Amino acid sequence: MKKSIKLFARMIAVCTSGILLLSGCGSSGAQAQSESQITVTFMNGDETLGTVTANAGELLDAASYEGYENGQDAEFQGWYEAPTFIEASYKDLTVDTFEEDTTLYGNFAANDVTEDTRKWYVVGASTSGILADSQWAGALSDEEKEQFELKPTGNNTNEFAITIDLYAGDEFQLIADWAWDTQKGYGLFTDIDDTQLESGGSLGGEDNKANVNVLVDGNYTITLTTNPDNSAQDTISVVRNGDIQE
Image 1 (cartoon, rainbow, N blue to C red):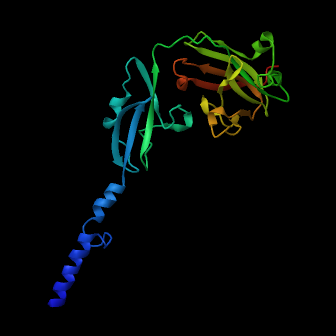
Image 2 (cartoon, rainbow, N blue to C red; image 1 turned 45 degrees about the vertical axis):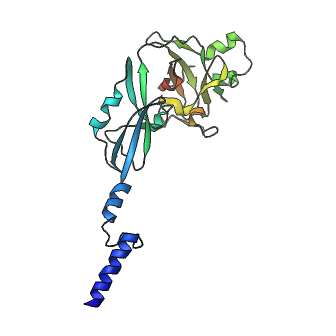
Image 3 (cartoon, rainbow, N blue to C red; image 1 turned 90 degrees about the vertical axis):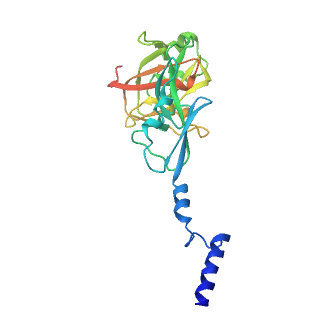
């Protein structure tokens, strides 16, 4: 009887002091529950819209975040882990889950945008095609540059496009006003067939500055839509129309 009393007293002392790790002290369940919870923070630019707490690996309750998708005078385009809205960081909250605390950035496209008066060009390198003449934005005359210029389509505000023959092994990017401070590479293309084109590798760890490498000969149309007020909302697509036209 005395041994039982002493043993019981020792167990109380150990649980009180926290020396006995989670064994018989009634705290293991609470700690495990705490460790399985994650917090998702929703942003609009630098503004925090709110947070949602959920269990790791489980879908978020739609009712907990749908209110954050209503932007004033703007159209909601989706949630992204990257504030630059790189397509690879897009998250579909109806199927995607999270294992750790995460920040998501909402892409809100303004209904009214400033007119883009810049001239956009495709530049690169080629051993067989016209891109060789661009010399990666080399010293060309305005007349020579024009063959690489994306022209307004007239279909949508600030939408520009060029149709061009590309050959396997060609590399290219998009730039504005023949200057590299506006370069747009592989990571910024929102619609691209990776069986026809691939990333040439990131530059300085930024996939949005990676060259687009051509894998299949063909006639391609590159379409760019810009928002001069927020370049993160620029979208680029490239579609193969068929065989080389030359």
